[in-house]
Length: 107
Image (cartoon, rainbow, N blue to C red):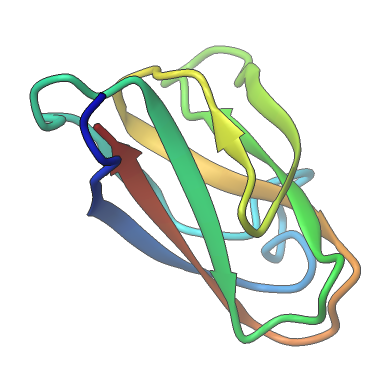
């Protein structure tokens, strides 16, 4: 069995609360596309936030209702693979300052 490799594919800064005028969104959009061959999972790493900080990841649908793709994501969490160019961090909990979310492809 091959050793697991990690490749950073996205990074985004999130506010600790939804952006002004937004119900859920606390970050700009980030893209998960062009993954390395053999990618079998995504890993989320949170920097600059309290331990236990968690959030949802939603997909920006132009003119539609944004679905929640992953719920209750926390640092070190791995998820299944979905690709899109318009994901964002939503409804963070457990922090009172801005934080960075890095997304890694596991392959």
